[in-house]
Image 1 (cartoon, one colour):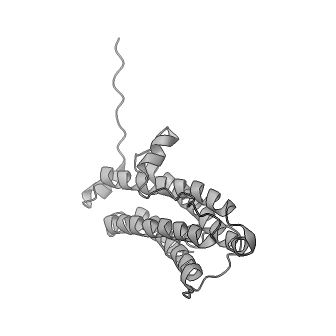
Image 2: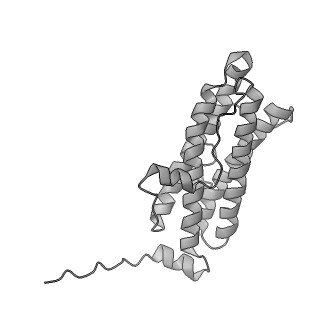
Image 3: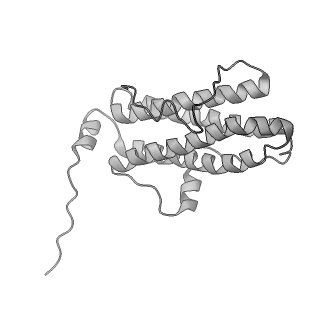
Length: 193
């Protein structure tokens, strides 16, 4: 006797999004790329942070660490949503890295100059801002859950950009010390709390 093909479950959460005009497959593709960027940024920020040395670099490590840990939090936060929507992450980490929405944040040749590392950090945050804004635009009014998660991530990415602009150009940012490393004041909390 032949096995019956497995029937795909009806997922009302996805059905409702599609009825609102959202291309869920396209959204999943965008989320996988954005989430891959958060994961690779976390990895590269680990290396960049290690190379912030000397008197000037030591003072920058804490800020780089906050951004690094919050990017890991963004990866974890949105990975759950990808699976809820019926998507998944590649099984091979190399494929995940290749899908990243943002360029790799490589250690610059002149890594002994902390400003060169800050420029790499800034470019990564600016790419993240553009990427999460696209997700917000795609989901606004159609997918409140994904929109809420993406806009919270976007808020933190905008803060990260401001930190690095302050450090590079002496531009005021309103940076404040996190209560603990990787706090993620927006992405850890519901906007309803």
